[in-house]
Length: 208
Length: 208
DNA sequence: GTGCGCATGTAACTCGTTACATGATTAG
DNA sequence: CTAATCATGTAACGAGTTACATGCGCAC
Image (cartoon, rainbow over all chains, first blue to last red):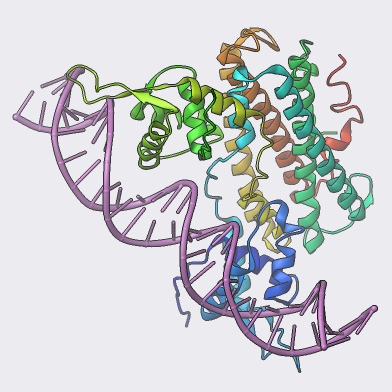
């Protein structure tokens, strides 16, 4: 006999389940992981995490033992049904994201700006993204067996880290290409956008 | 004599000012523009827009005449100080965005998924982004003088549209590269990530 | 013994969404 | 005349942030 329970879990709940599927953690630990590495694509403060953990616990998706001997710390563990719910969520088509990109919004009005201040703005942006790119690359290297080859198999947690980093790097590279192009434009040099320079960009991606 | 007024405008307020800097619009028109084209990087419902317009009006950044003859419609116009505020905002470094990327969050846990459902998931994603890319490309073409050359000058509104589209296209291309790579991985074909296939990707961006 | 990092909790507020509500104009 | 679109407004709710608050354990 199978009990059909309607469980409504927030996205944050799944972020937490995704962490606990790898190892048991306390609320405090989760807060740390939600800064780095997950913080690159999802964040939450502890003021959200503790209530969410209690909710997950109420739903039976995680369990918490008693606080550790002599410590206040209380570790949470994912349950069988927690894993099931997580897996179900993984294959559900994502909610279309509400776009909130302040840089794009500013760029839409770039024609209003004084060229010198625009130049300063986009140079600063370029610096920030370039830093972010090196950070990602360094993290990727530690997960690589060989250049471009993940050390982990498809069913190992590290493959998740690897795959997200690959997108992050692609995204940052595209962003930097764009910064360079735009800065050139602002300086009066009318170069081609990166995406137009080579006609086979991306075309041979799956058939090397 | 110069009055120094501390004006606190929401990001949405600047989105609206950015639109009104191009032409006078009613609240209704703004709601439409905030679906497309601005909707690609910022959105708002009319329930936010009307109150925000009244706030901007109170601050003296926009003015609204009487409703048009016999119509309910009321058009808003940006003021001189509205333009000044907008320009000031443009060069201010952007607030670091709170990342909320559900797809990345799922990918982080991809090792938990059944390969077939993961495959279906990322194929669907690929389709959606591929559609988005063609949409961007079609929009870009209408703004192009010649392939890769904007019709508009740096100080014309259309340059803003052009620049945002260039990033959008770069981003979607990177996203599609990643989808292809990941799908290959899931199928057991261990191809190189797009970013590793050619070592000069992006390097010659500003010096063709 | 004191200050820092661990560890958890809650209240107030903000921004944004959904839903409810109304009325005018126009196309068929 | 009637339905769709234009046009505006507000209330209730939800998710997330900032700020306030507490207490333990350990290193100096």
